[in-house]
Image (cartoon, rainbow, N blue to C red; front, side):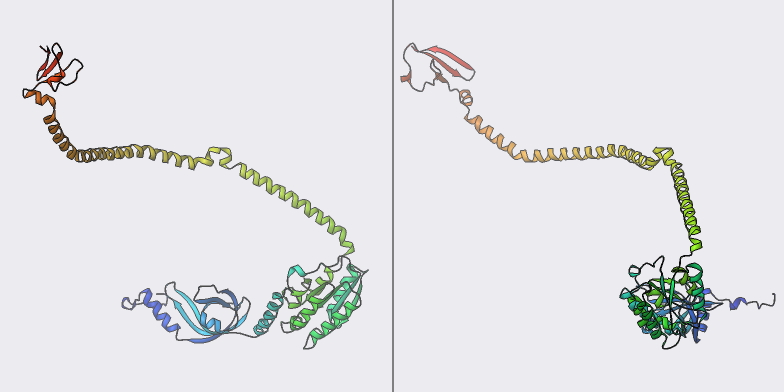
Length: 421
């Protein structure tokens, strides 16, 4: 239909089989690619580095195993132009195509950029690019140094800007080469000359160019000379998108040479307008801040919790009610279980007590029988009697009594009161 071949039912493949077929076909192709790095993800714990290369009309996700990535000798960064060798591969689980990178190297000006990055890193580790060491630019400098090419249009743009904005300032020009192998040394010498003439601030500027054209301003010796300069240095090198090491170590980086001239020259005719605009901006900022705060207060005050304070604790109150209900249901059951355990413990205690008293009951019975045998009452029951005198003492001998004494004779069923004749 519509000129498209119709797949036969016998030729239909599962998704896994189709992906395996495509994976096998792609992995047999090894190619070399040149592109710009647009994304990089190298994280601890990952087994591979993931990045994306692109050109003007396409982008390609790439992955490179960590052992290969470490052998490359540099870290990938966004904006680098790189040359990759590898093969296409498919991650079947996600249906995603990647470029499996075997080797990677910087291409074209990428090598220069890597060298510049190494110098920048070195200077940054020494604190030369730190914002804390940058000095403020004089607001009204009377003597300004200018280091640039005397034959370029840049010098005319800077001087014209200075005459228009701040004509009372004196400009000391050091004409130097700004391109070529000797340019960095010439700029250093020009910097020394203008500083020795007593300037209050120095402009180091040049027009736009390629990355290779701007390489003198990435020179380490020039960067150290700018950082060691006794007066503030303002750089305006190339266009706004260009950033050199000289820009990093200078006290102020301007986007263009003209912007650098404007940075050190207050415009007489614009000061009043500037102050007026700043005053208006401050007023508007305060008004907007008050409006935002008022709106925020209104939003907060209209929240339900402020209209009904009980809403603030409604969840906790419901949770407390639920807990109270569970406690009311649990206590009787818990008490019943405790009562049952106590009853069982009482029965067990009684049984234990009875078991412990049984031997003593038998001993008491034996002892009672022996006591019964020894009892005087038992003796009296067998026909014996006990005689006591008037004082209640036992009469054991006829010698204890005489005629006329009163005696009490105890027999088994009572006492007989009698007198001795």
